[in-house]
Image 1 (cartoon, rainbow, N blue to C red):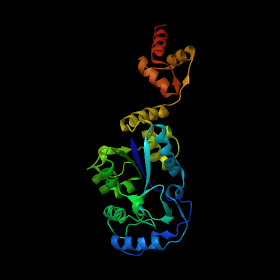
Image 2 (image 1 turned 90 degrees about the horizontal axis):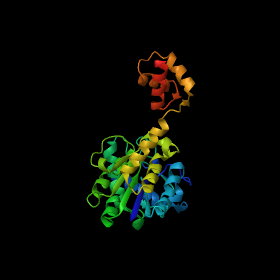
Image 3 (image 1 turned 60 degrees about the vertical axis):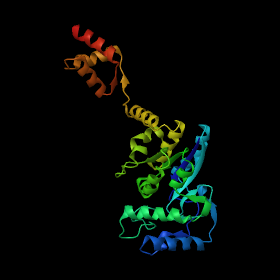
Image 4 (image 1 turned 120 degrees about the horizontal axis):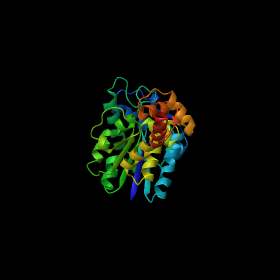
Amino acid sequence: MNVHIIAACADRKSLPPASRMRSIRSKTIDARLTDWRERLRSDRSTRVVAQELYLGEYWSVIRSLPAVAQSNRFASTLWVASAGYGLLDATARIRSYAATFTPDHLDSVIPRGAERRAAAREWWQKLTGARLLGQHTSNVECIARNHPEECIIVIGSPTYVSAMHDDLVAALQHTQQLTIITSPNGPMPELAPYTLYATARWQAALGGTLLSLHARVARELLQRGLDATAVRRSLGQRQQEQERPARTSLSDIDVQRFIRKSVARTYTTALRQLRDAGFACEQSRFRRLFQATREG
């Protein structure tokens, strides 16, 4: 089984960008894309392998995913979802750039005054269609059409997933083996059945910061054989364990002393009071001690 891992790019880069969207003044998507393409073509700065360009904790985890896939008996292909280049093979050599789908950012691809969601989706459609790096670029629908039996994992913020929305919906015409890892933010009903919503409450179970949460959920998914249900169950259980308060165990004498001071009429109420106070006692043991203390 081959897995296509599609990860949104990162803002931090190993080389300073010479090409920045902020230098593009055009007001329409078509004009901005034309000017951006010319800007990249005239860029003579150093090229670097795409997966080595991006820095930070999030991308560090992303780079580890092919090895995780291999250790779990999956072949994998790593792709980068880039607002500047489109969907590109992570081994492609590119120049550093600054472009993002984040609204109101200086390097946002979205023209000022445009409807944000529609403009982002139009940019992604036309950018991926332009194939700025030739055979090294693609779109999600093309991957699904050419490899209908292979799995696709998409990792990104709601902003990036929303920009890719139409491409992802089109991919579902060719495959159902799609898992999107993002955070809940805004309705995307067509994609909801295929989305693994990462909650911030999973952070303690997975480690790291919130910035790398989506990548770490993807790692968990690979480790659990691409079973999203198993991921939800496992992380839910680990979350509960992390949230379970640490309580101090008491001796029988201390438990009985607590019971004598309590005005609770039932052992269940008294046990809840004891636990709320930060102490621990197994239920059957507490019941026995409660009965012995009150009867005595």
